[in-house]
Length: 262
Image (cartoon, rainbow, N blue to C red; front, side, top):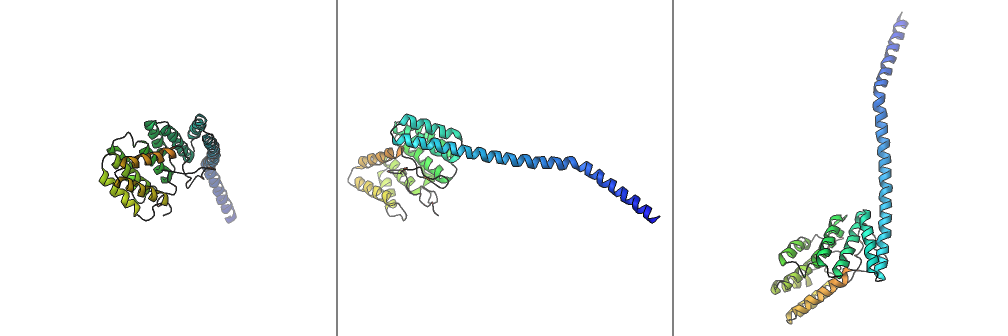
């Protein structure tokens, strides 16, 4: 009799388990399907990103090669193609290159817009602040001092990667606005600041000497020439992107970010 009751109870328990499994099965299947879809979506996105980076790298390098051969039209086309691919680092770099070409052609406003777009696309502060600095430099001749001050002041913070170069550019903006005493003071401050790159320190010392000799316009012209020379140079490589082969940074283009290693 006891065996009969145990058998009945076992059968009832088995029936309950089966009913529970039948009710839970759609949820188990749905969860498995969701995990599978998520995995394939991630895999597909990874492949898509890798494809974008490869395409952007290729177009960017073609642009650099065209630039080295003085093929400005071809370079512009390749940089525009690299910017459209969507890989953030190369998009930012390509937009900066476009901005440099516009700046060299005397189209300061167009250049500044491209540099601003490069800053928006930048994957990190090193790319972003370089683009913001170049935007301000492109506008030195045309923008009022107040606008330049607004653009440059945040970049002069000691924790920002191009603080020294932003301080130099802001001093030039003051000099061009007739604020000679302030400009000279700021430049002198740069000369005695620890960590200032040698090329920048030497340039600033020359600027101060020119101001002291009454040749402030010559100092302004020298800095403008340095910035114009740097306008079409490939920006220096940074954390997430290796510099293209043969990509120098000269003149007004920062070589080593101030504080970047901190």
